[in-house]
Length: 147
Image 1 (cartoon, rainbow, N blue to C red):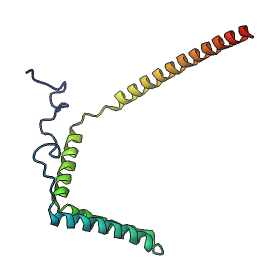
Image 2 (cartoon, helix red, strand yellow):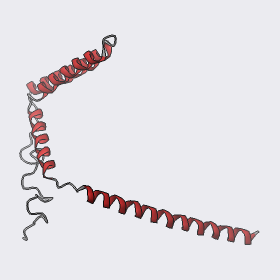
Image 3 (cartoon, helix red, strand yellow):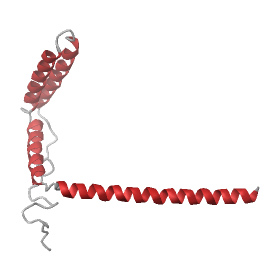
Image 4 (cartoon, helix red, strand yellow):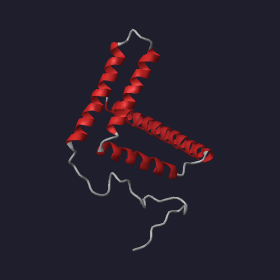
């Protein structure tokens, strides 16, 4: 089998050498009762935070937002104590590492590509306008001769 190489040797190709762990390995669909309780607790805390945000509308917005953020942080902390939460966090970290490997286009490349797209769109618009004018002329020619 031929070796697959990236056109840019220092950059990983589209076939990652270390795929995301959420997609590979053992998948256990069973969630322990303790994890279920923690996840329900996290959802309840999140719901309480949102409810309290609206219930205490008479207080200033910064205080309510701060309270909501604290409860969201606690809910995320509780959720991260579960196996599902740890897997999700590992996936986020691996996705962040993959994003760092992406070679983003330079400003010049982006500008050139944008200009090419704009020119092609303009040309297609002109061609469609001319086609529309021709079809309008053809329909008028056919309908006027039939009358």
